[in-house]
Image 1 (cartoon, helix red, strand yellow):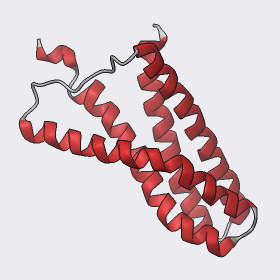
Image 2: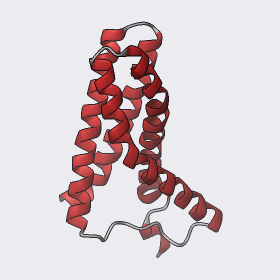
Image 3: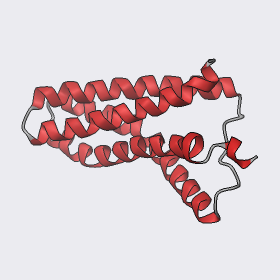
Image 4: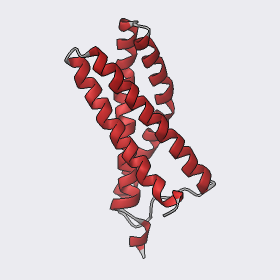
Length: 149
């Protein structure tokens, strides 16, 4: 197996792990476990950075020839997929900036500002992580290109 074939699976796994860490971090802070929340969220950010590196390597190796969604699913499925993909891509561009600001504020113990940013960052980051897994499932599991033949 070469990188081009394995990286989509690695990326989906990293997105899934980021999702779990985000939810765990949310639960921990709701329980008042600030230190555990901090390390969980830093771990989540680390996983997301590794994802971004793998994603960029994959698309660099593909040289602009990324896998496309096949034409055989019903139109409603295709339109739903493209709507999900569009929102995923647009919001994914914001996540690194939101995450860095939110983490910075938390590490500087600027709790009120951290909470205000986290109220935006958390749901956007969670949506991007979940839809990242869904994009993978749609492309590689539910509607693989080979099934069209």
